[in-house]
Length: 316
Ligand SMILES: Cc1cc2nc3c(=O)[nH]c(=O)nc-3n(C[C@H](O)[C@H](O)[C@H](O)COP(=O)(O)O)c2cc1C
Image 1 (tube, protein in one colour):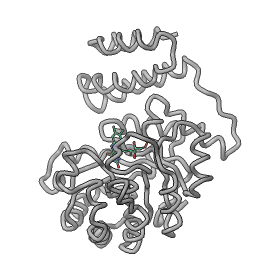
Image 2: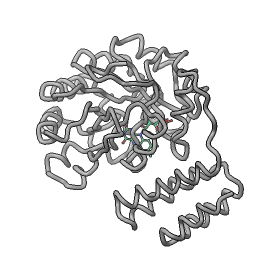
Image 3: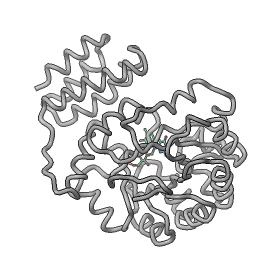
Image 4: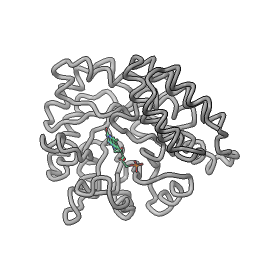
């Protein structure tokens, strides 16, 4: 599949999740065949004000390829200015967030609030596209609320303004993460535009990835929460299409990946923050292991890296 002139070699992308899909986790998902990566969302204003913390969210490794940097904001001028400032940091693709439901984001008319003003969505894409050396994509929800579902309209407007692909999460802003993903909306978006459509929402196995592709006719799927503690989901999905045999990871393989994940987080974020973030991931990795709740308790009460590694090594 092509996004603009960027070739995506596979059908399963890692969906962006602020606070989760950082460089460490993206690298782990790359090891298991994720075909496309997006940064955590980055504020256009943060870039314009020169915040180092904001810039650090664009750090990536070579294994995360192709990589999109995701921007959020509410003003077309901010998008073009931020893209100019990013300069050499611009990766293969720039994605625009039109789906975040978080109160502090929508209060500023960013994220999913943009879907209330489809023309502004088009103006933002146009402004970004005018200055960007790489393709522009957008990530939307089904709409703001049940009574204002407008993803096909927003997608069409963004396509006309120059977007090269659309990711659709089949929930409204009002749903947040409750209820279930509406695949009809993804199907309607796919019918409305000619550019590639990436379907997103509630994929937790190769079986339901395949069902979404068959039902909606989307070109790719993006997996968010279903990859937490299960980066193997990408190999599992790929195996459906390559015919290669997929084996669920043994406990030893899981342990090795958990240890690697801890090491990467500590390397990129320092030990204190790395361990805090590792605990959240580890509690997902141990979901199906024997004595999961006891192990989780130990994980959350551990203080040092050696202690945490010891708990992981002793999982049976
Ligand atoms: C903790 C968390 C953080 C998220 N952060 C972002 C984000 O930064 N940008 C974005 O476009 N979507 C974000 N999302 C939405 C996901 O990309 C995805 O659309 C949503 O979780 C549905 O897919 P899933 O069911 O596969 O998780 C986030 C979701 C979660 C749970």
